Image (cartoon, rainbow, N blue to C red; front, side):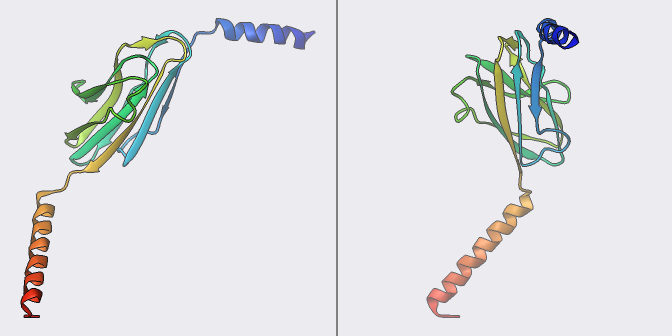
Length: 161
């Protein structure tokens, strides 16, 4: 009798429980070379995913993504909640929505901008890539090395070696 009652009440309890969203994220702390995030709505509600990260040095940040919604505005924000960069995700944009921006060291986050919600099983996913911006000294060393290779090739052509 108790099992039968439990079998009847358990589905009813889940049916009246509030819907929620599932957020999946590899973010947290210092941004690795590649991070990813996604969110799925299990009812008509608002997206709640915020993906925080920190940059230790000046870096080139590139992100791309897609959404099941016809259009989802997605943004990169700084610590003062100012929009730094943004793009539009749709079901076909995962390969074409690359957005790149050079950022100083500091705290940043990604979040959906508009619409703030969707129907049941609406979702989005994205990837974020970080590449360190080379220091000016790196370029100077690179050019000096190319110059020395040119000098060595010229000497070899003349037979001075």
